[in-house]
Length: 312
Image 1 (tube, rainbow, N blue to C red):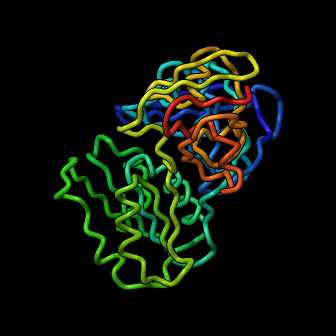
Image 2 (cartoon, rainbow, N blue to C red):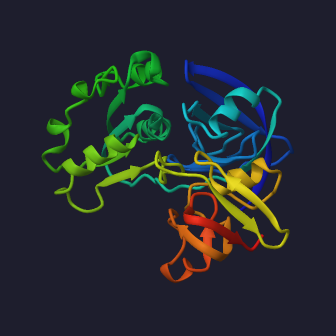
């Protein structure tokens, strides 16, 4: 994975909990181009690797722009960016990847929930420039919490539905009129898990290939019922305790032990580590079944019971 050293050129507060960061290359290089829906992986000041959707135009970019929500249960990524990535801070950024690419059709329905607006905002502007027919549904807790709301309402007046539920489950948006009847429209949806499940449930009868999702939290790295356990590093003889609210990778990093990582969401395979003893609770989406007995993705997986021994 190609890495670039980039600098925080500017910060802009979008909402009380969301800040936009404009990153420019430290060296005189041409930034890789990207298409709407793309993301970059950033090594945050804490050392945590986190994926963030790109907001700006990617045809000939001179910067990469991301909008980051401070997560209430942040384990070092978003909090580190908000607290420590000030103007002038240098960060390692991997070249853009796109797991949420646009299709080439005429009609689109774009559905954004909360911070999921970031790829949707980029898609909407891209499609508008190309003369496509675009409708947007933007859901958030409140107007104050909705990043890029004014820009979207201004540019897509009459073609955007904005709904704020105030955090009340009884006030959520009703998608029935939008999704009950299959159409030639392609639907792109990004947002929290309940939104994804709602849209999936209502579009199960749509023709294959018309509904597209990006779940920006593909793995629950830490769960409410997780408990602490120990990992023994065989090569050094060091034993590290992994707290209930930290991953193995984070616990090693906290102990000053450097390990390779990239996505830190259980998808890329960079942190694959030999498992010498113990029974793993595999939570990744990278290992094949025949690899699980002797390997573990330390960014997301844990112990089912007792100590794990790793080839580190």
